[in-house]
Image (cartoon, rainbow, N blue to C red; front, side):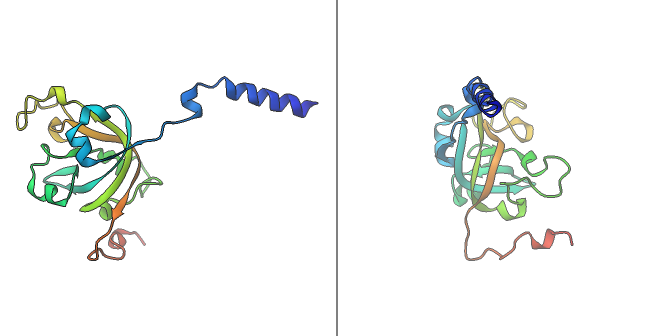
Length: 171
């Protein structure tokens, strides 16, 4: 008899949970090009995006449509800022589960699952962004990806080293 009451109590408790806690929405699949062309359509949504990722002192943490755009474009005009805190969430020496090490990701095509934010209305036009009005370094990017739960290399090239992060591993 007690066993049935426990099962009934658990069933009632689960049925009273808000729907958002019981079932999370699947991320919307997209390419970096789609996010750059139609950012308002994806604003505030969980996305799964593929694009070319760079991370450098000069250009920052950015996702481009492809490698050519990363090489030839001004970063804040043709890219999406990628939240750098993904790689340094606190004290752990390595990134959380689902996040690859930075040295393995930069200068590669990647897949990112996270939250897409867009503030295009705060920009006066390309090259005339209001400082602090957008995202990333000096607030120059109109869009960003945050709350990243998956960040991994999507496509490797023949020139990739077998273990690109090996030289950074502590013994």
